Image (cartoon, rainbow, N blue to C red; front, side, top):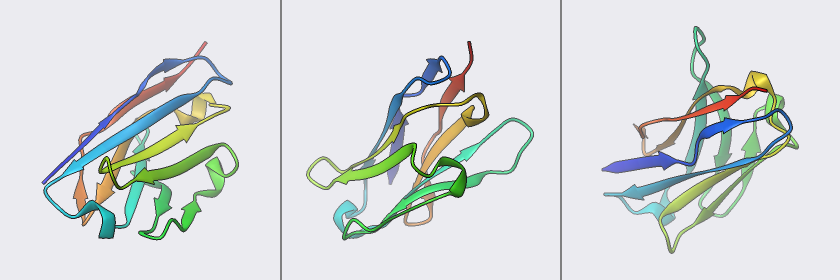
Length: 110
């Protein structure tokens, strides 16, 4: 089982990034998927969820700015992040079937 997140980087406040997480080793199309993040010195926290039918749920802190989506043909879940703020700085992780991928660093700074 592998979950490989990518797409992080350094961006200015107000900017955008799109994270991707490619999955292998389990049947992606029947697996609910999650994004979490962990900021320095803080606990890992929930960011977004997408069900197998496309129902989504978001943390209040990113509501209206981030969008989770999935492409079952590509075994990939995405996190489109707009209007980024310095407090969004964290390592972002994808999760599925109770497995965690390696994180991707997102840094929002001027």
